[in-house]
Length: 437
Ligand code: GDP
Ligand code: GDP
Image (cartoon, rainbow, N blue to C red; front, top):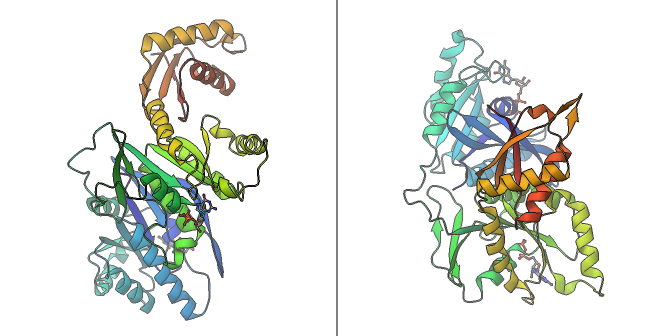
């Protein structure tokens, strides 16, 4: 299960982005390219007490005639309803209930998803009485907050997390590999999914996520069990926003969170664009195992150097993914589609691999003899002890005399030494430097 998603909706200027900024630390800007509207939308990660969650700021609408605004708002609400576990509906205490608020409320009320109502701009306690008006929206108790002053957010968050889906009772067994297929629209994700699953669809059953729309498809091949994590657009064809970049990025981010192995699909016919890099970068940062799948290889005009050139291009464009294997396939002719799952097994194994402490310490000791650690003003970095603290991705903690002395380049050197000694193909490796106690 990935992190719960909170979507912020409401008409323009009520303070959605202000509240978003309060809830979120790290963020990713997403540009939506729908004809007529080009603006930044935001997707970020929030944390409160022990809860982590994603927040989507569905954005406001620029001035336009009323029809455009209503259409946009409907679009926005629809998107939020689709993606969210909890909808945070923001209104403005200073304007009172407006027709547009009523309209949003009507749309939101069609869903069964939990709605939390924030009455914003309640900047001082005297204004608390203003909130009662908002009961007429029919979406439950209004929570007074001030986005700009950071007031009332604790109570608001407490209410929000109450509605997060409970972790499923039955933990998935360790040996299931969760795979997602991501990429921009039309690269062939659905076709690849079908090609991998086979014509007869070896699907065990389709189970809907506990309270979400996400659908996971479990299947089995050669004794290995997999779950194909909800992929973009398969079931949603025809919806307006399906083809927008924003929508595909959002689905991709969620799918990445939910998976062990991410297949980043690139259209061999068109090459690499910025959007591919953005998504791949997120998979890397999320610490997932990655395989780059170049699809539509059947239509690429080839000579004996084409694959090599394409590989060089990928290595150049995706520098941070130097560990990711590249497969050249065609979902259409099924060429090399059969190599995908065996590669998934390999990278999943690398992703979950644990190196015994004694072994990793010997390796690092040898590495420091070959290339002594950096010095700064006469003081040399001394590595006392290394241990692998986590898997998925493999995470090593290096205990040293003074973490300030560790250089990025030396960390990279250690990573390379680890990669030379063990097969960590397809998985990022994290190296954290800590001061020895
Ligand atoms: P959005 O269009 O819904 O995303 O709204 P913004 O977050 O951009 O805020 C719209 C305006 O309301 C900005 O001028 C904010 O500074 C202001 N604003 C946001 N939150 C508060 C608040 O809690 N109190 C007051 N007084 N102003 C606020
Ligand atoms: P998605 O939007 O990423 O899920 O892409 P689709 O699977 O819907 O494929 C988009 C289009 O590309 C469809 O017309 C497919 O028939 C076509 N397509 C997908 N894979 C291949 C392939 O390997 N070769 C060729 N020639 N066409 C493909």
